[in-house]
Amino acid sequence: AQSVTQPDIHITVSEGASLELRCNYSYGATPYLFWYVQSPGQGLQLLLKYFSGDTLVQGIKGFEAEFKRSQSSFNLRKPSVHWSDAAEYFCAVGASDYKLSFGAGTTVTVRA
Amino acid sequence: NAGVMQNPRHLVRRRGQEARLRCSPMKGHSHVYWYRQLPEEGLKFMVYLQKENIIDESGMPKERFSAEFPKEGPSILRIQQVVRGDSAAYFCASSPPAPGVGPGELFFGEGSRLTVL
View 1: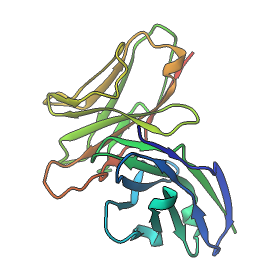
View 2: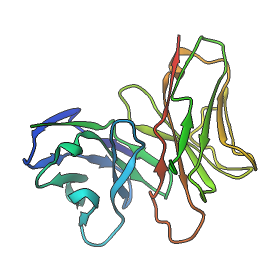
View 3: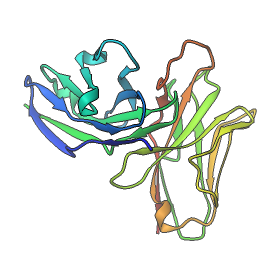
């Protein structure tokens, strides 16, 4: 069975500081990995995805994530956060293009 | 708003009543997916539908839950005889039918939050 753990429920970061959100997954084969973001009043939006190839993946809004097979991790990073990055972030793993399992989410608060 | 539209955004039901959640996919999308997020948990896949067809319902509870996506109109997730454990956020997603859409390229709505008293 596939599962995702996001160890941090809530992270507070200062505007301009770097951000790293952790994601660990459990899956028997090479997974499809995703990060989604949900801003207040919005639906989930795909930030980036990993299927194969280069383990460092670039996404939208200046985000990147690194797949580390040995650690079963897919951590999300941004070098310098903006106030508009305040949102809830979800990591997901999937065996197919639609049957995804999501983590419980990490809420990011950005302070001025 | 050309995004995935879900309504109602919030629904309160008493135990034993029926809940109906509606989802209108993005324009041009013919694939609809329903996910459920229980409190303190991540979203879990429930069902995948195309127009007038259920493609994969492996994530649906065996009883009381049903979904449809008729030829005309929105997709409906129906929960009969609701119980407190059905309280959750229900998310709908859609995707276009054209090839080239990769895995995970689902467009999600804002979710419908069901509270069962």
